[in-house]
Each structure stands twice: as structure tokens, then as C-alpha cells.
Image (cartoon, rainbow, N blue to C red; front, side, top):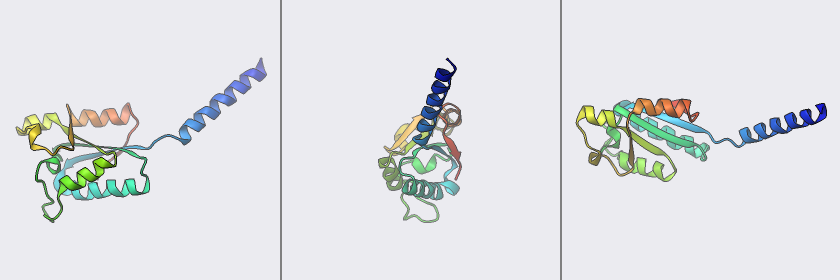
Length: 142
């Protein structure tokens, strides 16, 4: 009986290690100020995927962080940087972009004012918390 218990324990330990070895990295990038975060944050995400292409990345934006996901948004310092094309390229690589609906309500904005690649979540802050606590996403704020 003791031998069978040891074998079972060893087998379960091996399976847990094997599962950990193949676990996918998951990261949530938090944007709350597009002016200071958008260009560098999108660049960070691109670089992240260049070295770790299997990483699952979610971008959650609220407050002034949603501005880069609006139609026609460009970098204030470099108007040649068009955010829609950068977001579209990242979405093609599996990145999910979510805009806080509380922010929309508070700022009197509509979903139609955002690029097609933007998704929506009832609360940006709540979504970040869910991703971290329930889904074990690491947290990065560019």
C-alpha cells in the first residue's frame, strides 16, 4: 500500500510539473493615460510578442487611457503615428483590446467612436482585477 501511494504521489507531481512547463504566459497591460502610455505601451507589446509570441495579452483601457482606441487617434508628439494601424497589427497577433464602459458613460462617448479592433468591458478596473485574480494574468502598466 505504501509503495502504491508513493507511486501515485510521484505520478501526480510529474503531471503538475509537466503542466507548468507548458503553461502559457498571460499579461494584462493597463492604460489609463493614452498621452503618456499609448506609443510606448504598444511598442512594449510588439516587443513582448517578438520575443515571446505565444504570450496571451489583454489591453484594458479606462479614463484617459481609452483615447488611443478612438477613431482617428494619433500620437500628439508624432502625428505620423496612427494608433489604429498599430492596434490592428497587434490584434492580428492575438492581442485583445478592451475599453471601459463606465468611462464611456462618464465621458458621454459611444462605442461607434472607437476603432473596429476595440472591444468593451463593463468596468476596466474590475476586468483588470479579474484577469489578475481569476485568470492569473501578470500586470504591466507602461
